[in-house]
Length: 554
Ligand code: NA7
Image 1: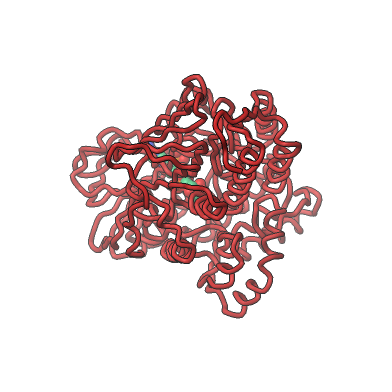
Image 2: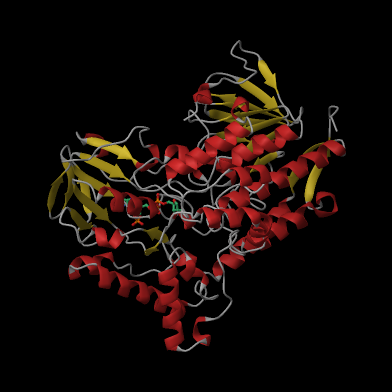
């Protein structure tokens, strides 16, 4: 990690004054970093805040063993800088967390982004001042900043979810949150380790820690479908070829449903013979990654087709896992494949053939409580030295609802979203002028390449701000009708998808009391970009634009 991580911002107001800015940016992940770069390049006076001690977002916090991206690294990287594209080379097809953090450090250093960040700082409130057309932002350091534009780059997965299990605080061993992992390596040798959670995070931890010299107990409630990642080192010749073709690769990604280069077939599952279907599925299994998801066009629409694919994967589990009872418990049932985030693994199912790895089936034998010594189920107590919580996130809305964001007429985001998040494009909120989100709820955040989306959203926001400044306007927000129309589209598309049939963070089902329903635009990234462009057309028709009450710089 770079030493400059502890730099303080160039302007601070510890003396109790108020710092006046053009733009305030909250968050130092991919979205926040690009926003800092973009707005600085436009000559706007800005300040960014990040709770961590450095940039990196999810890759700063998620340092757990085995953490790795599940999109090809050449896709999961910035496209805005041809120089960075040429200067950076990936070492693996799917980069691990340390390499992702090295990339993030490279970008931050190369573009000198850190000087705009105030680290170890949480924004506690953001309040719209209607009279002065400004956001007033207060931090946990007691400072106050004001700016006409506020960008929430707070990310869809930044608030870890505590499991609702009694006794967590009683445990006398070591409790570790996957999403708040220490910065130094952890040695599990000779330890009894428990993992709760078998989503993408739990699966990555299990396959890594299970290979170590420890006893590993995996507490699985809902099994996930996971497919072989088939990660390989990046051959220098291949990387060089990619660098020669980055503009075309990016163009393909920007115009694809997932914001990446994975092929997506439009063929229907039942348009080919059973033998051809099996051959295609087998081929995609051998290719690895998320190839299977792109093999047919109707897997999230046709339940019967989906079940055939699910059964194919269940068959693969049975082929690998030697103990039939364990294999059966690992087979996901009762929800469509790909309705939970499909996981990519390297030897996950093989891990259960090791004598030191024990699957604890929490559907057959639910967790009753956490005790001083470990975890108690109806069948008894499992004593543990370490308990790892891979229990997911209060996704999509958690970060913005965790602090006070107060818009027009004193209305809070908590109030606006009490029945589920509403937004236009996942970027703006009716009633919250000049407040912008990157990768917000009702965009395609969970279903497409988050870096392509962050770039798209920041560019859209920058264009909107330039429009205001060029036209002497003081504020912009979507009309109620614009937001309602977008939400109608989001909901009507979601109705047709099988995604609603699984209980996941995508639909808010993983957090008690959270409004339920898919709040993602499932029309694909390319269509989302079209919608963003349409929203900006004709001088942002569909938005309320107020004249500036004070002089604005063009
Ligand atoms: P996920 O996918 O939300 O997975 C969380 C896991 O934790 C899941 O298996 C849950 O089981 C389990 N969980 C949560 N609470 C409990 C309790 N109380 N008891 C037992 N098990 C529990 O989070 P991840 O961090 O793995 O992945 C998040 C995203 O990161 C992923 O989608 C990718 O986009 C990257 P449940 O399903 O609730 O039965």
